[in-house]
Amino acid sequence: TNIFNEIGAKSAFHKVIEKKIGNHKVAILGLVNPDFYLGIKGIDIKEPFKIAQKQVEKLKGKKDLIVVVSHLGFDNDLKLAKQVKGIDIIFTSHEGRYFYQPRIVGNTMVVGAGSLGKYMAVLDLRLKKKGESFLNYYSSRKYREALARHTLEYKRLMSQPKNRSEYSNQAAALKSKIRSIQREVDRYDNNNCFRFDFVQLGGELKDDPTVKTWVQKAKATMSDNSVKCDL
Image 1: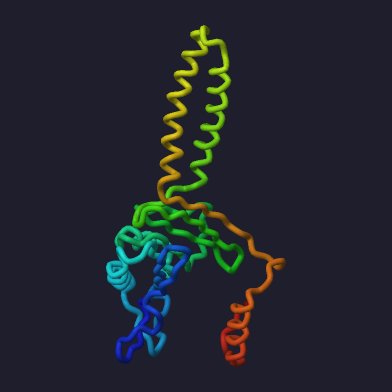
Image 2 (image 1 turned 45 degrees about the horizontal axis):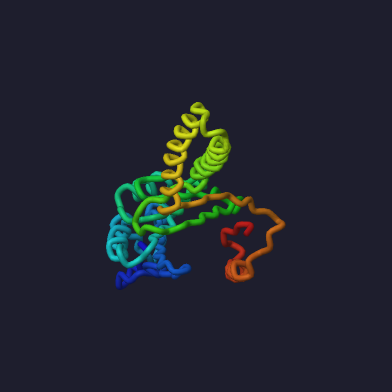
């Protein structure tokens, strides 16, 4: 998004990739840190924060989800999340950091998946309210488990003889607790939620044919003096 041709100041790549996933409209931006690409001829890498702000302002209200694939570095991605309001997800890279759960900055999730292709981050989303923060689905499990446990106990108490006041008092207190827990469960059910997992990659996974073709073509264009890596 922030890489331009030096001549004509035209964007060298897509400014924004727009996709429809299910019934949701998703916009994807790509940002790189100018400091990481000094000395490359023929391109002009613009200040990423200003470019991001400009694009997000254009996309707000038109897209259900705004995603940034970033090579700014983790600290800069945290700043981006704070300064540019409206970004829902930032996939961070450069340092190769990974997190067992996304970092939440305001309404923005910052996600890292390690380095060297060791892991794949899987982020499942349930989008109900555009532009609002996401709750961690796994955090709702403790409320669901408590709700099932207390509901079962409440039914047991209600089956006791009605003239036993001790059972009635316990049942009343338990019913109040069930209502409180149900409110928490409803909060998760009625709002945006995410579920985040890591998948460890290994030799048992088959190569993606499209990506494999890209790699083969790239290797074929390399000269003996090119810097190569084992892809």
